[in-house]
Length: 310
Ligand SMILES: O=C(O)CCC(=O)C(=O)O
Image 1 (cartoon, helix red, strand yellow):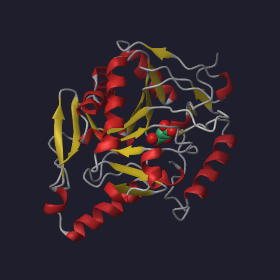
Image 2: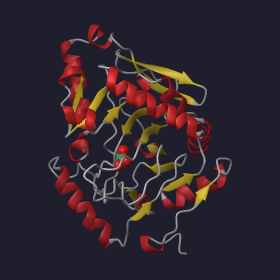
Image 3: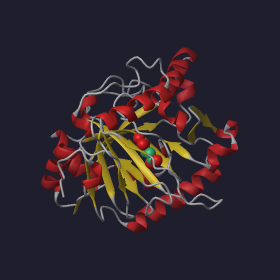
Image 4: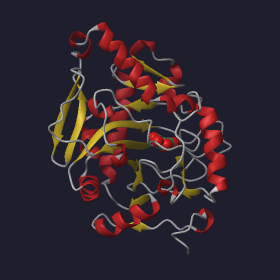
């Protein structure tokens, strides 16, 4: 086993127990990711997913990202609900709020930041996004957060179902966070395709090989903000694609006293940190049309990656 090598084919994914925070942190710094096993209660995960389905069926306030656009309510095309990629479900679901800063997450991120973490944004996936290799570093820009220290950007990926090649397990590129690289906004004229084509060549030239992360329910994978990862292709030949339920949360180290920049979003403290909550029903009332337009444009920019997602 050559864990420190870029050569993904030889890389073996090590798993940690939730109490092994220090060891996991050292591994994260070296490889750009770490995995905790049995990191949350499966019954909580199942209850959360039941709530997701309930919200999809009944909550017209839910936001979906589909083919690079954000939809809400009756304007959501059928695929938005069929292939859901839900944005910020924690504004709607108490069970999501229990998961986003659950103890192993809060403890790991506190160790990483030396400070309580802030959850800036979440994405809930029913299927693999099949999104090509990318770094999140410039892509997570919720307007209510404003500028933040992107070197502290990190994600957690909560496995609510097992994953394998059949349902498009994540592909990760260990060590890829260590090398500086171009971002989507470095000369690709906002062409996501040109960016991902360049990145795939960059990965090859630098000897990085993708490693399939076959998750077990209850696993939490953390990745560094500049770590390259992809939603694996769904390889099942079935006409009905197999699901791969997951919750992705993006965090940063943001001073707790820093207020939300958008009156439609409130910064809420939780025992392990904080998150941003949509002040339901007040956003439209308290925002001028100009600030509403700014918010929509910023959100679209921040979610440009979804153009090749669901
Ligand atoms: O779960 C997936 O398919 C991809 C998730 C991802 O790449 C992301 O949210 O940045």
